[in-house]
Image 1 (cartoon, one colour):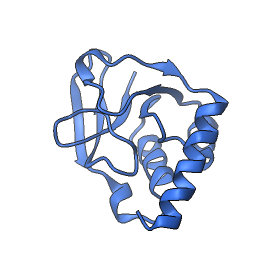
Image 2 (spheres, rainbow, N blue to C red):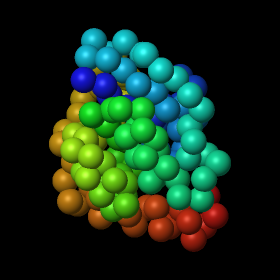
Image 3 (cartoon, one colour):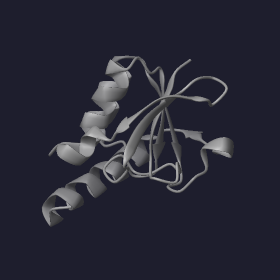
Image 4 (cartoon, helix red, strand yellow):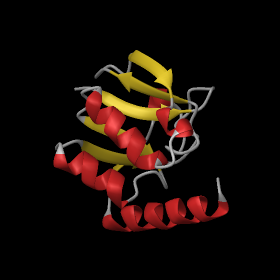
Length: 120
């Protein structure tokens, strides 16, 4: 199992569009890959993270609340990637996750639209 998530400089889970790093972890939560978050250079921030997780072979994504908009959800589900949600700022060593819901996808989509409109 390969887990993909996005983190800040303190390696705490961060929203796809705001994180500084994208990381992969193995089943023991050992970090096996780190790269700059590709979303920071892309106009379609959340879907860019979803695509990159798929490209890197992840079969699980841990997303901060507000990260998985509908296009990201669709990208991940088409590849049978399991999606879990946690609170932004969660520590990777004991992250508490829940399976994604349709309400989470709707909320994330609204947040994504508001970010785009505000230019953030």
